[in-house]
Length: 359
Image 1 (tube, rainbow, N blue to C red):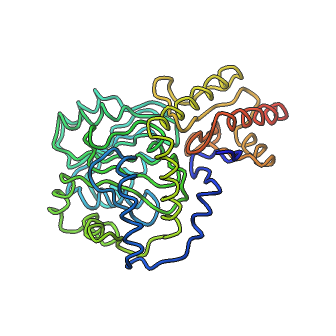
Image 2 (cartoon, one colour):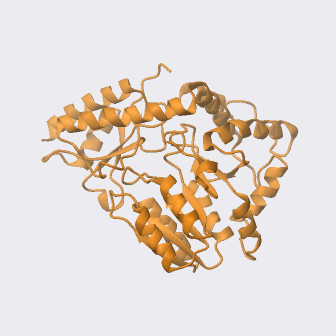
Image 3 (tube, rainbow, N blue to C red):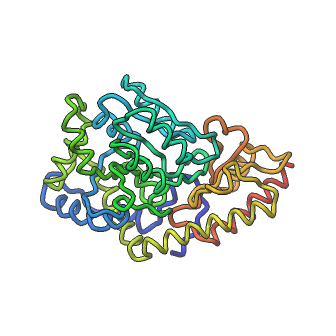
């Protein structure tokens, strides 16, 4: 890829010209043979991305839809939410909105969930499911998902529900090997396709638990998605141009190789960390749990983060502001998707110039 990327949000990420052009393909009916062929063609590369032999389903909307659907479809009474940032806390809020017995195992913002504390929580109480955020976009924290999922399996019969929205395609993720029951991700982050589709897995254990729940809603009923998936379709009209874009972007991803993509994202994180250390920028996340796709940084004294983001925008460069309670004190760099080392180098030069004008 030769395009210069000056759009480095922590999602949605930059979409290349060839992927955008794929969206101009002729429209097709979503119940016809052409769509079924398109839908079927996506299965193999999606299974490779999720590292699963099971089917990968899809829904039209944002990842929050399937976050809600996962608890509505599978949780009968109680659910434990592991929280370490704004998006993990959103899942907790969803469960409480539905009147579920929702408990919270909270880590301070910037820190990862402690597997030992999770083990203790599971020994105190029985849960239908445990939710975990793989990569917390608001704080730039990567949780030790393999270890956390193992704890859940060792200590309980609870389902393991995982938000892998900003990690899938950029950080190691193993649906089958780690025993994940529902893994969900939008198309618009490290996968680098346009937003509008949620991709998710749905294990036999999760299906069996959903079948025992009488009220699962309509748009939130994951068993309904499964029935339509069996017919190579979706429950409602999908954004077909986005599926064309996803088809092309998956070809790009397969050509690069998933493990090579993981390695490249790790290098982008290292490059950002080295620059930040040299220039007096500090990570808001703890050093042992930094994300390979999102860096959440505090600038040196005298540099206001919102002003820095605005100053970059005036130069045609987009980064993310702080999120939630960290909004006034941090900014975020999304080094995900098709971002390369040269794109980060150009961004750092722009940050230094803008910061010099502000301080």
